[in-house]
Length: 533
Ligand code: FUM
Image (cartoon, rainbow, N blue to C red; front, side):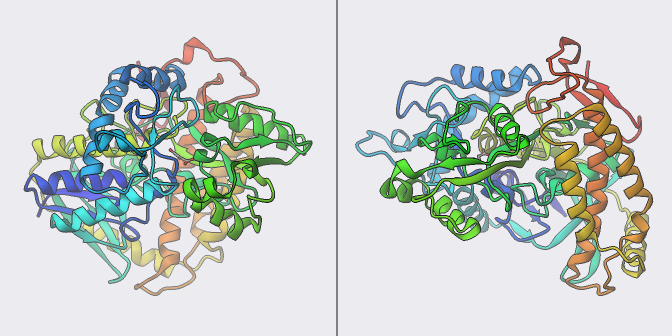
């Protein structure tokens, strides 16, 4: 029996695990893939903290930038908590030996951490490790977790939370290597399962496994999702492959140009605005490029070795010689599990959540680059402390375990002709075009009935392989089921919000409307979207 069951091994999960293990708690991290295979790596540009290492900055300005970008849908108290935690979070990561890029001639280690300006920020505030920031943080956290005695269970897919009378005391998993269902009980359960960017399969910077499994499990357990209509489209993914080219490039001076070689937008505006400006060009049949040539080889090798490599590998283009064709791609889920100010899931006891899977009132309608890494580390640690302070008494869930075993057996025996992978690809294309950067009622209503059809034909989608062990197609089927559930939540929430705000842009309601200045709430029980009062 563990004190803290951490589901997900990205930055939020590993920060929570480390914090808890260092306080003496027994911690188990469970992940559906391998530790450090997480979307945290996609936050390449940096982690925000008002250190003022390049020019004067303050927590108040960080709060103001974040609030402005959230378009009235964030919780100022939570934003302040997050921004105030910034400098201490960087100090903590520095003590853990995160290899940040450094400035020369600084008086203290903290003052020596290099910072760059990302979109929507009034100062260079993102601390970085070249363009590997998220990855380097993850690797550092993982090393420290191993030293602190955290147990890891890999390739365990979250099936459902163990919940009775609204009290969560662990979860059921499909152990992909053993080919069996396992129940893990815990005094506290922490979800750090990431977002649902992979719903936009083929049009997303996220890995195919970013299917919002924790959010879907919370819905089924009777919990609440908030602001599901807000999906961030990153302005600069490589055209065709959707490989992320970090905002750090624009922070260093890269420009966006159209076919005529003209600049057409403020490259360091908030992501929603930049993505829309690019999308408008693409809809007119133009191509859009990110031009890094003028930055020069020395600077690019120093600041962005990964971007250079990715462009050469995936686009076959040398950014030192040619501009890169880019297009916006789904990058980040602003919406997620509704949590209170203690980061406890609404409507359920014993369950905490932080990071991209949670909606904690930080990002509202549009997230600022660099704030997600800060949120996952700062709130992962806070959530772990809160969770350990409010344990529940786990009970046996024999019936749930048996029913999950029967369900998996039935899925493995299913005879349908369609593969989950092919269905996911079709869904991704449809969502990008009809529930993407620009939306309207007609398209969304069509999408909703399309989702209904997909749901009614779900029994024709089968793994095509009855093997119990190492069956990736079974996992893809489970992920596809979650994707359909979340796509419906997204579409219904987007239909409910009859206005344009931040990343939710409707051509039929192009203005922000004060009527909709509250978050949306989505549950399975009510079967409907409500505005939070
Ligand atoms: O562009 C980027 O490096 C992404 C950063 C982020 O999502 O915070």
